[in-house]
Image 1: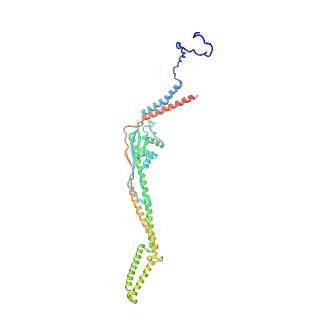
Image 2 (image 1 turned 60 degrees about the horizontal axis):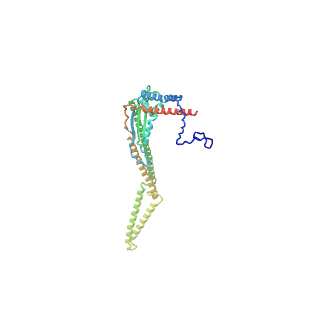
Image 3 (image 1 turned 180 degrees about the vertical axis):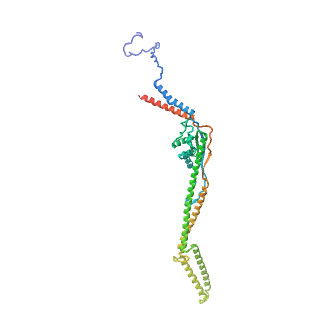
Length: 405
């Protein structure tokens, strides 16, 4: 049986005949290649292109044409200033310390808010006619120009676009950037803002000084009333007690007692010298009478000083001495209070003569030579990026809705 003989049924039926090394197995034939149709533009592609032209290319072209053909040039004026203060040593009062005229970042923050306020805009509009200056290019540039009949609210909004204060809280310096359609207008508006800010600082300083003077005067009035009350109380006490100075009366009384004791000692010595004389010697009797009289006087003086009864010169000397000392201390304290309050008032008035707060401008309003605004490339680029991403977002939403169908 040759190799080409048919195989009978059996376990090896249906199996491919194993090739010998000398035999060649026919390779299987591959499927014929499929023909790919050329890509054709579909309706959604046309819509995407149309939306790109409508949402991206067209608006970007219109924006750049407006920026370079119609947008008016704007000039910028710069100024920089800070709020400075003069330090004074305020007097200390018994009622407390007078308020210190201080200055810091709070003052420059007030100026920062004031520049953006409606009050300043209304005042400068009345002085400089801001509506006329800001609507100078309104006919050719309606986007960046202001309407001539704009309301005050619109004017304030436009003002905050054209006048930009930048505050550096770390060093308290405020930089002011003012835009206008002419360099002269920008400089004049910038100078007016600087002037009004300086006036505000002076008003704040004046208010603080007036408060200090008013408080010093109030303290002086209280000190004066206290001194009058203390002096009246002391005079009333002297009149009622009939004592000018209890200290002097007490010292006089103590001096009299010291003299009596000294005299008693002398008489006792004389009596001791008469010990050898006869008992009927009249000198002994005379010495004994002197001793008794001096001792009685000393005892009477002691009782008079310590007595709680009435006396022409030393009425209740010990009892009234404490009262007198208290009244005297009150008067001395009132005198010191009055002196301190009067000194505080003089110092507060002296401080008021100085300009304790002032606005220091280290960069005066500049006069521009070339326009800086509008920044056409930056604005055009920003609008282009925004338009492109808006178009991409619209396309993604449209395809997402299409895939859900």
